[in-house]
Image 1 (tube, rainbow, N blue to C red):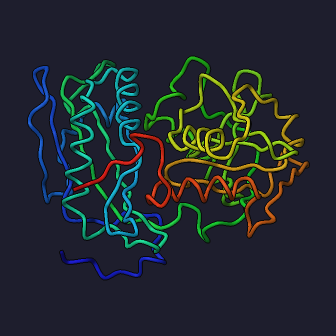
Image 2 (cartoon, one colour):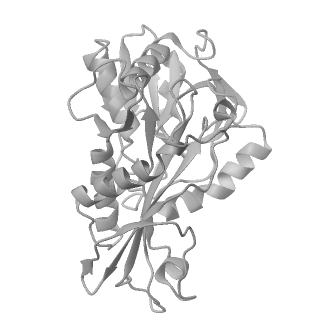
Amino acid sequence: MDIKNMDWKNLPFGYIKTDKRYVSNYKDGKWDDGGLTDDDMITMNECACVLQYAQTCFEGLKAYKTEDGKTVCFRPDLNAERMDQSCRRMKMPSLPQGRFIEAVRQTVKANERWVPPYGSGASLYLRPYMFGINPVIGVKPATEFHFRVFACPVGPYFKGGIRPLRIRISDFDRAAPRGTGHIKAGLNYAMSLYAIEDAHEKGFDENLYLDSGTRTYVEETGGANVFFVTDDGKKIVTPKSDTILPSITRRSVVQVAKDYLGLEVEERPIPFEEVSSFSECGLCGTAAVISPVGTIVDHDREISFDTSCGGIGPVSEKILKLLKDIQLCKVEGPEGWIEVID
């Protein structure tokens, strides 16, 4: 196999065109057989539903090289499950879980020379997505849909790798009660674009959103779930809300903390006023994995967290190492967590 010659250790988190992508179309009430293509361009009508009414959802997952040279994906079944939930909420056709996983497998296999080598700190990011493609001028769902998966090698989501992030409490809302905050719809992320650019201009890495109903409970950031560690280091606490995206990484963090490290885990509404009592704070998601938070700024108030272990807190460091070791097959994970691409 012709391995790509790249500066793997200094890759940005950005789009790089690779060799193949998977495409399947839904028309007349059924999906076609689907398959790989070289073509990275999409042609659609100017009145396509996705352009007019943002009928689209997406997923994100990664492929890695293990020490013995295998290529693996981490928990793609949960991505398939979550995309199905997103599609149902957005009035889009379900893609069978087997089809989703097969599309991921084909895309990874066809771009295997782009999978960063073991130890580089980089990974092959996979973006499955679906959108309404036929012309729609009245406000209604599309009847024809386009599903694709592309791949690109990426470095860390936050520049500089593991470092304490400085985030702020946003004055904007991420998701409305009984809205679409619990699914991975493109429109949720469009709502965060102004806020994240404003945060960056003011020297922050991210926004932390409070619930839009009362603005008193912690929810998540624009691109990741959040977790906290209690002051005694014995308990992980994560926010619970109907408007939080169910992060696959967050669910994995919770299980690793409980089953491998023997920590207590609590998922519940977290009043922002309680945050200062925690010793550690971390962001978790497919792109970020775990990124330590050093400071949360609430206007004229700052809350600091323990990042004494090379920029990350001691409990977060243990969880991150274990999670990465499971992803890279250095530690045996729970059954079904690893999909070997062969």
